Length: 224
Image 1 (cartoon, rainbow, N blue to C red):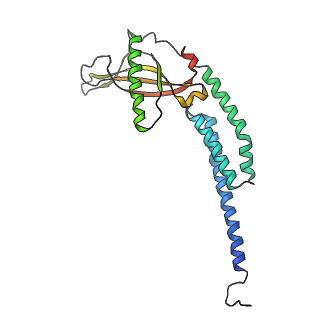
Image 2: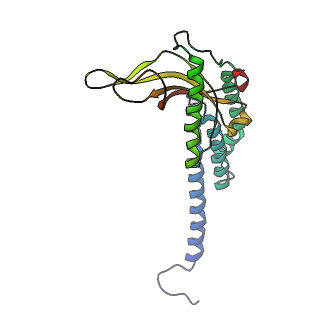
C-alpha cells in the first residue's frame, strides 16, 4: 500500500545493506593495503637500510599495523602481521645492537697531516657552529663530541688550468643527539672538511663547508 512506480518497495533497505557491505569492503581493502605496505617496508629493512632510519621505521610499522587493525579488526592478515611484529623488531634490533657494539673509535690516521690534534679541535668548533644552524629550521641540534683525521689533505676542486683551488680533509665526526639517548648511541659521520675556494689556497683552515658520506651509530663509551 502506498507504493507505486517501478522502484522496489524494499529498495531503501537493500541500498542501506549494500552500503554497509561496501563500507566494510573498503575497510578491508584499506587494511590489506596498509599491511602490504608494512610488509614491503619490513622486507626492505631486512635487506638493509641506514642505521639512523631503523628506529623510525619500527615506529612506522607499528603505527601502520595498529591503523590496519582499526580499519578491519577481524582481518586475519592484519592479525598475523601484528602478532609477529614485536618479535621481528626485537631480532632486528638485536642485530643492529651487535653491529653497534663492534664499532671502535680510531685515532688519527698514520698519514694525517701534522698537528692533527689541532686540526680536530678546529673541526669540532666549526662543525658545532654548522650544527647550531639546524635550530633555525626547528631541527634538533646535536653536540659535536669528537673529530679524528682519517687521511691527508686532498685536492677537491681545480680550475680550468688544472690548478688546485680547493682542498678537503677526510675526518670522522661523532655527534650526540638527545633523541638517541634511549638507544645509548652517538652518530658517526664519515665526512670531509672543505677549505676556502680560490687559486693558491692553503691546505689549512678556515673551513668553508663539509661533505658527508657514510654514517652509522656507535656507543658513547667507545669514545673514551
